[in-house]
Amino acid sequence: VAGTSKRAAQTAVELMTAMTRLRARLRAESPLTDMAWNWSQLNTLARLVTEGPATTTELAQAEHVRRQSMAETITALRADGLVDAEPDPADGRKTLIYATARGRSLAATFPAAREAWLSTVIAGLLDPAEQQTLLKAAAIMNRLADSNMQEPGR
Amino acid sequence: VAGTSKRAAQTAVELMTAMTRLRARLRAESPLTDMAWNWSQLNTLARLVTEGPATTTELAQAEHVRRQSMAETITALRADGLVDAEPDPADGRKTLIYATARGRSLAATFPAAREAWLSTVIAGLLDPAEQQTLLKAAAIMNRLADSNMQEPGR
DNA sequence: CGGATATCAGACCTACTGACATTG
DNA sequence: CCAATGTCAGTATGTCTGATATCC
Image 1 (spheres, chains in turn blue, red, cyan, orange):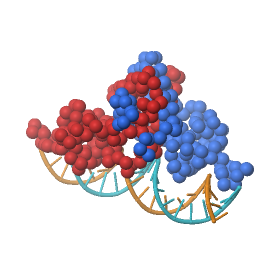
Image 2: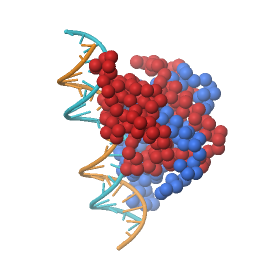
Image 3: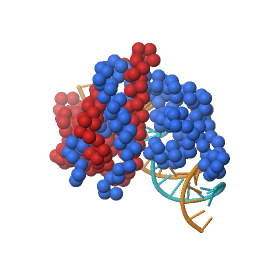
Image 4: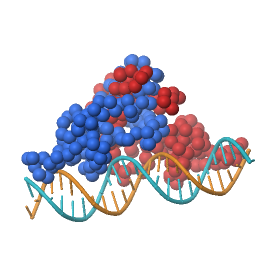
């Protein structure tokens, strides 16, 4: 891998393996039936709450999925009354999505609902320094996700 | 969330959000057509290489998926000649899966193939301390994934 | 026979690509 | 007419659950 250090490659592998395994465990701990909303939906809702109304296309770009995939997420959130839509007054092609009062209140409390297991093991198994490491890692991962660096060979 | 600190809950949310977003970006950067094997397959192969032969049931438990899901993973690896199977001499019900020479050599080199993008951004955007944070976080995440703590309400 | 293992079949979730209508 | 947005339809992937056969 020209240009990337062995260290970086190792970090990439370790991180991906850990992510795959932790997500699998989380899936096993909280069956689909237990939760009404999936992660994409909750992340999108949180984004709408914190960053204000946006179009489906903008949300899709922010979350790195296709417009069509995001449209499905929005449809699910609308069906539950967590978000609503209205035509953009300035541009008739666009539809602005915004969080409803119900969506806002859910976004403030949803952690309890969905990641009960993860919260519990974090609180129970990790010391403050380790929790801090995870928080810092999460911030770094978001930075990587949003980087505009291109793969060399593309 | 009785018993879990607010801090732990926040860490859980941040971590899950970051994982979802980074995985989405990774998906966008390396289309499925680019790679012959998925993460479950590569993780399982790596496990067989480092920990020796195991049954499908054991592998499923270790990776937190169902036996049937793991069986599919194994089938794919066998089709590519990366692993092979032989009946357990001691217990006719079991089938031992082991990595072939080809599988071993792939496990040693596969990072380059699959996470080119991730390796590149890690090498390009993160300083050594940040890379270290990710490595430590990955180890902690594996610890959480394999913990035997139960969700309180189950 | 009961318990464990493996496998076959069908379903679902979530994302994807392609095609099309509408608006600016 | 072209570009951008939104939507409909079909596909693919990786997982799940349920049912069945085999072995100890």
